[in-house]
Amino acid sequence: MIIAIDGPAASGKSTAAIGVAKCLGITYLDTGAMYRAVTFGLIDNNIGFRDSLNIEKFLEKIEIKFSESPSGLLLALNGRDITKEIRSKIVTDNVSEVSALKSVRKSMVLIQRKMGEADDCVLEGRDIGTVVFPNAEFKFFLIADEKARAERRLKDLKNIGEQSSIENVMIDLINRDHKDSTRMHSPLKKSDDAIIIDTSDLEINEVIDKIVNIVNYKGH
Ligand code: CDP
Picture 1 (tube, rainbow, N blue to C red):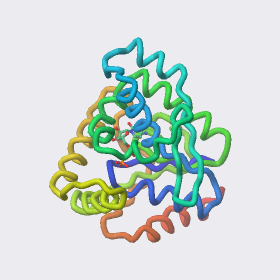
Picture 2: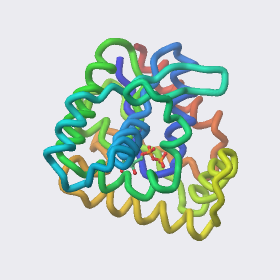
Picture 3: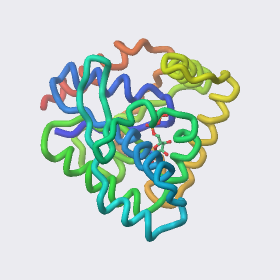
């Protein structure tokens, strides 16, 4: 069973997807973290975003591993833990450009399909219901107003010790959504058959319950 959760930046996808996966006892895959890992890897290896030859070489050997820990999900890129680094400003500022590259998308989608096919899985991202798993049994598209999204993201950043302001966070979210929605390959887009959930005024548990109830009602 595949549950696809897509939506714009900071719409509450990660927290909802983690909760749904826990509730149903199935695997969780944060595809945004994978694009962040590639972005970090390119910057760290001084590979320019237009250097297609070296990007291809980097992607051929890439190894992305998720593992659980008491403090949450850890992500390792080629054996190095980069859980914290992928949330840094430099990665956030560049991830939309990197995730628009065709070679990057091709390689990540292959990995995501492999991971998703191995087990029942909740995948969250931008193109899960449209491109990665267009035949997913369940598709959700989470939205929230800009103020709610900016407030949530500011809180996340404070928790990891990154300084910002509500204005800067809002500008980042709007810019990223614009880039993600207008790119040529796999843009952020609601799948026609996805259920929209507006999370602006919902507590996280209410979002999780809504999704779990729909999945349980339809049976799986
Ligand atoms: O958590 P947040 O909403 O800030 O974003 P994320 O899920 O970590 O995704 C970071 C970026 O990765 C997005 O802004 C997209 O550019 C890209 N992304 C994508 O292109 N396709 C996906 N399936 C997931 C993320």
